[in-house]
Length: 348
Ligand code: MRU
Image: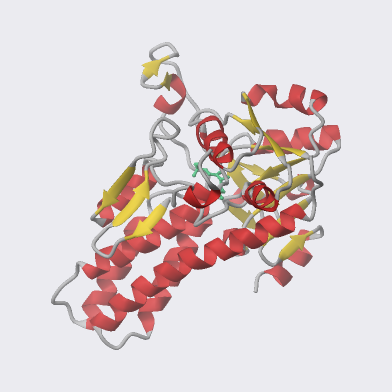
């Protein structure tokens, strides 16, 4: 087991470039890639080398700061316009996780009051570092609140990877596991493999092994049987966008788990920083759902598993209606229904 402190950071700012942990290669190799241009950052987000809502926001923030450093000879006005155009470009990388847009909004605000190009460049770097640093503290806080809802020895089910590598550190839904292991508590996990990209089998299993958590992988279609037989205390998931009424987009398969939680009468918790809330949208029908390439479904490890010419539907996310969610666990506390009424009070 690797000690907790050596769980690699998913993103590091290196002044002339950004280094990211290549999550496509896990768990077989812990590979890092250096990104020197905004196009490389864009591509790493699209290809899921860096993924998970908060990590996408952090990568985009650094990507914008990096490309701003590379601008030269512009007037302040020209510089600001160019940075905004680059921000617009990054916004096109993935549509569902609102943290991407939230982080880029923050970056654009950081430009506003600068009175020179140099000051604007410095502001952008500082803001990106701040976004990453704050996320670590936020995730730790989410973990503390999540721990208050579980008991020593509990077993929780999760899907996808809402872990340290999807954030600055600790993760959201995986934060209680990291904190439990720091505090000498026992929390066990059942991780849904999360077809088609296998974030559960590849990433969550690997990450929880690193912190010494007892983790068992199941294929997604084993969830009902597992909930029936394995004394699961709660389902705990992350989120990509939570709207005003509490409807929540998260990795495809989350909605099915929420329906199962209701059937088996166990709590269904959504862990998310307040940066994942988007109260400009009233309900989940407004959330853009990313559809990804058919090859993610028709192929496994580059090997075709479905007949040529088969039609494929590959939504990367689904929306869980708020009535299936027991509570939201945020850095500002635990939000219970009525969500439309209570969510605004937690968005400081
Ligand atoms: O497509 P991905 O791997 O980026 O999807 C990630 C998820 O759905 C996570 O649950 C969510 O972003 C929260 S990560 C803390």
